[in-house]
Image (cartoon, rainbow, N blue to C red; front, side, top):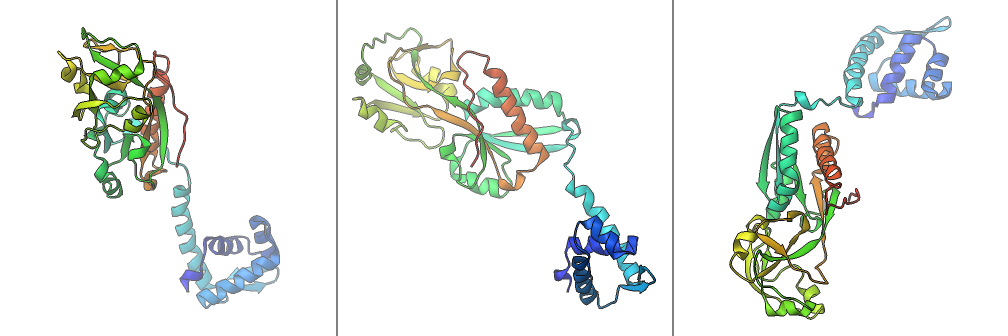
Length: 308
């Protein structure tokens, strides 16, 4: 019969026991006295007891009701703190958080996040893993990952996320390379390098976009890390398109072209079960604040906060 008992009925029993008056209990619950009587009838059926007997103008609890009153009062009092927002103090956290991100996002955001964590939450340990999109869903579901910094296309559909910023591409070559481009189709005369941190291939995600503009890139290399682009381009006339926030770079020069591939959004995602976690909310807030501070620097554009 307990499956028929709800919180409102428990509160009603306490109020009637405390006030010993149906009318006052009804006023406190903002319901009619008839509604109180109906719920009392249901409670009597659940507990197989009269619960209250009338004595003059009072509703006096039976011995069983007195025992129930003490137990129900204890249950409700123990639950009440759980209905209040948790007070979060990052300085008191003793926990380990795992974040997955490509090297670009690590350089753009997570280095600064680590600095903040050391200053504001010294008991929080941060594990940063390279982005492995094929295992993201499983890792998030099993709690092996807490946050993912990525582009939306790499995320499982059920993961909520917030957009941190929008990025654009810039064409680059090694410093000192002899690169002369007067028209966009001149890109056909050069070899190209692409960065594919998620899946190795020699195609590139913008192949159709380039072809629509008359460029069929001769991609001669695919590397897994944006941080290695300058090393690979050194001593060659090979071109690459890289995110603008990797520049300026002492070993790269910007190649002026009148078109660039579509940019991308960088987002932070979490598992739905941690939606209300104070720690996760704090970490996401720190990432948002890092981006907001960086918007004052040249080249940074803050993305709109969104979700799915």
